Amino acid sequence: MYNPNNIFARILRNEIPAKKVEETTHTLAFHDAFPKAPVHILVIPKKPYVTFHDFVSMADAEEILDFYKTVDAIVRSHDLHHTGYKLQINTGEGGGQEVPHFHLHIMGSHR
Ligand code: AMP
Image 1 (cartoon, rainbow, N blue to C red):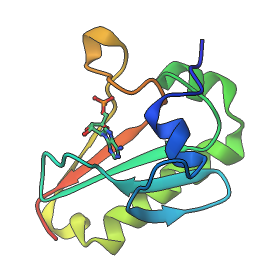
Image 2: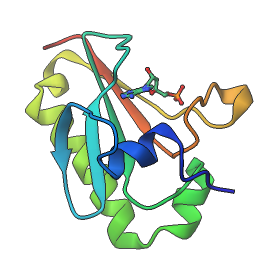
Image 3: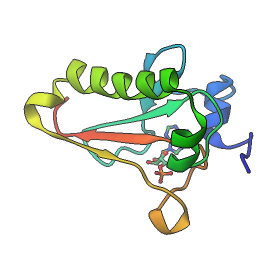
């Protein structure tokens, strides 16, 4: 069950601030507030999905394409395709997911 009071839902409603990197019709990206790499950006769909499975099974093709195209655009705009980067999706308690709104971490070493 989706909790509409999770921190990313509140960022989407502009109730709390975030350092936005990119925004499209379906997708929002912002800097991680507690970065674990020199570049640490979170990418989220705007609709309320909790897990990777929820996103893949419930989002339509346009949303999914928009999400991954946005990830790739950020990688390229931050020049990470030259230096290397990590994409990470934590899922569920055992997977280390703290915020129950589906998100992908982009982590790289190049500012
Ligand atoms: P996860 O552990 O995969 O759920 O990742 C959640 C991420 O959200 C962590 O890397 C946190 O540092 C980050 N985070 C928590 N609160 C905020 C916030 N208000 N703005 C931006 N990032 C946040």
